[in-house]
Image (cartoon, rainbow, N blue to C red; front, side, top):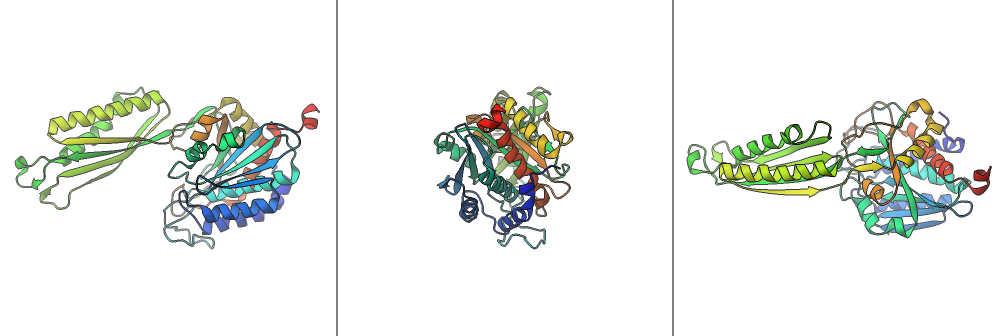
Length: 392
């Protein structure tokens, strides 16, 4: 694979940076040590500007190219997950109950690699804005950065990001025009009845039976209220109730997520859930409260920018390793907020066989870091060539 030679030459540094970050994971917006490590590397590279403390612990660095031109944004997420690591590796997490189980340590290292190359060579016009973001896993750090005016403040015209993909062939790239990941909403349903003795159900109002009916009815929404051509996943992930086998409880709780690609489908789900809750509550004599919370929107690539990203990837991994018309997957990503504000694109980079994301035995594959860094670098050089290169 034609990785940029100078990036290949510091592949060991990429691995060392990544493994350091892996050992010291941070959660949510509290990525201060991670951001400090990133800022220290960026200063060593000689970037032109570093702006820290954005969205609590995020930062943006600027590299100026040759002459005037647009500003391209490259984003990496920095936060980890509240999972106890089970890899047993030498660079395993030093902090109990936390680990980089989604590869954000690798994403950060890849963007640092691109930054080092671009600061050295500067074979592009305009500027590069390196966006290191906290709280992708929870808290919507991308939305907070957008709300804090990052894209306007630094004049970002287009924005790009990538994510590693376990069990996709190492070095394979997948992207698509239009939706590439789903919107995700969460819901909590509280069913309140009247507790009592299990031997005398007629003297109680049983919330368990009502909760079971609600759970079953919700699962009919994809099959009976939405076209088979419309993507929709509803997953009930928690049902909590009761304390003993001879007690009818007073309350039951149901929780879960809804994943959609289209706003119209999202609206149907929310309406039908409310109707199901109200109707079931009336039928069983319970009070039913639905708390439906919209989350990250769908991640929608700009068609033209997805093509630019795919072309840059082809230069690095080869034409046969790039799929540029993949169907969307139903996971979610807060980079969607940046794509709502600016044209851009998102891609997946295969890292070969291994434990899946969010698994205690997951580990980022350091051998793909030079590929990701090279794709970011080629994206900048291809889409913003300096004046003499463009003229030639």
